[in-house]
Amino acid sequence: MTTTQNPSVAGHALSIPEILRSVLESADDSTTLLAAIRVNEQWFDCGTDVVWGRRPSLPISALAGVANHRQQLYASKIRQLEFNGDDEIAFHERFRHLHFTNLRAVSLDAYRLRSGSKYYIKQYLQPSLERFSFYGGDLDDELLEYIRTTCWRLSIIQIMAPGPMVTAPAFFRFISGCKCLKNISLHHKMRHLLTDHLLLHLAGRPSLRSLAFDQVCSRQILAQISNDLSAPFKDLQVLHTAASSTAAPLLAQLVGQLTTLVLTVADSDAPVMHTLASLRQLKHLTLSFAADTELSPKDILSLKPLCGLESLRIGPAEGESSVTVSLLESGFADSHFDELCSALPNLRDLFFHVQATLSLAALESLSKHCPSLMNCEMMPVFDTQMQEWEAREDVLFPNLRCLEIGGFESPTMPAKQLAALLRKHCPHMTELYFIAGNQYTDDVDNAYALLLDKEEEDGNDGG
Image (cartoon, rainbow, N blue to C red; front, side, top):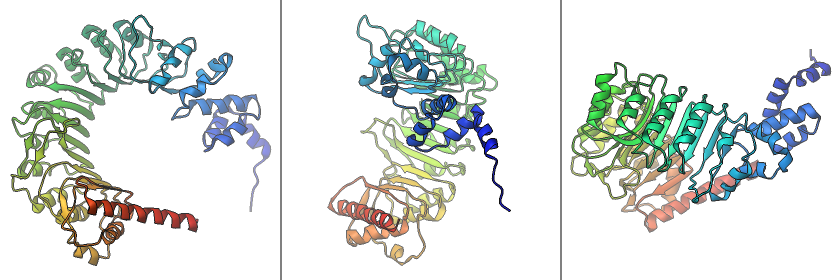
């Protein structure tokens, strides 16, 4: 028996703003929404709530294009603002008289004031604000105090290069006074503000879930944290930081509950990797080296206890193009790589930017032990003796999306044939890159791209 809903019931439901707003939020194209907001006043009100309150937000230019007398109507509906580039600097002054009363997140791009000019951003600093992102500019102590006292709901802050006018005492008052913070990211030209006093406060801060800063942690401050606090970083799940090699063991002792660690090792004075074996809850590990480092098989295999890892990145620190991380002199072989892979069955992302002598057997180890692998970057150059791959009927990498390797040497297989073989064993791979480019790898790359294009054309024709 088929029942038809009473139109009056549906009409009544759509007269309730919460239900109407939920229905309009499900609209997946702007044409539908634009038609909906013309129905009546209530639909206009709910529809514009959806249009201006959606994430990602409308571009800043959309609000600037509205007639001045109607800008406040829409400004009060906006939940997220993101300013990018010099072209959008002028909007700050144009919006200075607006009240963004429902704003939850604001992102301000790098901006340096001209001498004598003013930085109009207080209109975005509302009590509703939960996320403040500042990517370089001229903050000062007074503005930080205004944020602290006004934006009492702030839970996420991201600050880079706040300028020379911010003092360390004022910055400490700002951070310590924002009581709801759960995610703190402080980077680039902030060393004068990241005092030991502040780090000690952060270590003891309750409910802090994510912390990122690029100040190098010394043994002294970590020892002080260990001595002064009974349960440092007790709620911390995510940590991005740098440390000296001799401080790494202390750091690992303080953050045993981490699920994500991004660690830059400032020197190569002492082995580091074995100190991380105690972090058994890690799912994501990035280990970067800021100085030339020679690793050993023992170093690599010390990561085996981290059997829950889904993402592993090892290599030079970002921006350190001259730094080399190597296993070439250590006797590291395919068997060691296989032993590591066998301990990481959940691995989805591998970025192994380490110089090492490995063969195709290393890729086969990943296929055997890491079936969920989606992204793989490795430096070795492999040979093309791939008869076993040709003979296999099963798919080696059923989930791989991106592969970047050093390249191929001693080509014994035509480029088109190798591209087809890669496509067979990596049916979902859409990105293929070679670090050591040559004519052969260029030909493989082009042949693979042609295969993708043909599949897309065939799919369009079939649809």
